[in-house]
Image 1 (tube, rainbow, N blue to C red):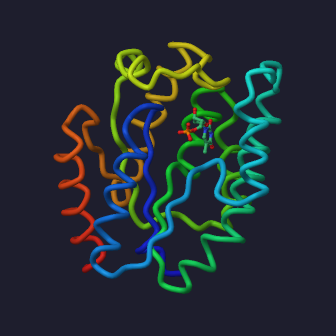
Image 2 (cartoon, protein in one colour):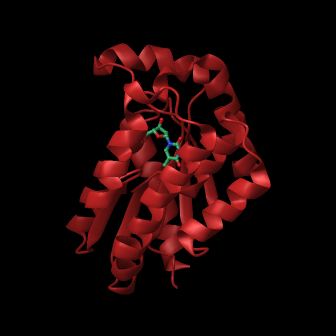
Image 3 (cartoon, rainbow, N blue to C red):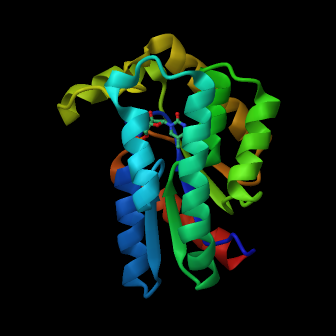
Length: 209
Ligand code: TMP
């Protein structure tokens, strides 16, 4: 499967992924490309329903294993129903999170066995990885400054606290180090326009190679 047009965005909550996806979607559409943006967990009717269960604050007693299987169940439906068929049709897939989120949040953040996480990720994706991953690097301490601006309540994961985010951050750093060919690290504190320009430049290079 050609994964060149499969692009994922990763980073801590509030790192600006969705803004960048919107800008890139517009950029690609203006150049005549067909684009499908997806948000994980979500993107299909079934996956959106799983998302509601995952983010519901009433579910504070959800076990770590239940959590990873729910994320993965939402993902496998998305991969089979949307990602694979649309890539075959020549679409660009812009994914707001993908398996690296599971490794960072459930593996490093929750402390689940990394080998098990890897196996579950493999099963949920049939081994399909993005061709390029943009990691918007935001320090955990910087999240708090960004929350009031959005003015909404924290969801179940966001309520998990500073230590959790510190571990997730370390997880992303390790992933970036281990997957240098696929991962591009971008400072999330640059301006929206600067980040967009960096992304476009990298993408032109990656998709023309
Ligand atoms: P979002 O708000 O960025 O859409 O993401 C929802 C939350 O789900 C976010 O806190 C990260 C978390 N998450 C995981 O813990 N594991 C995963 O595999 C995915 C896709 C998201």
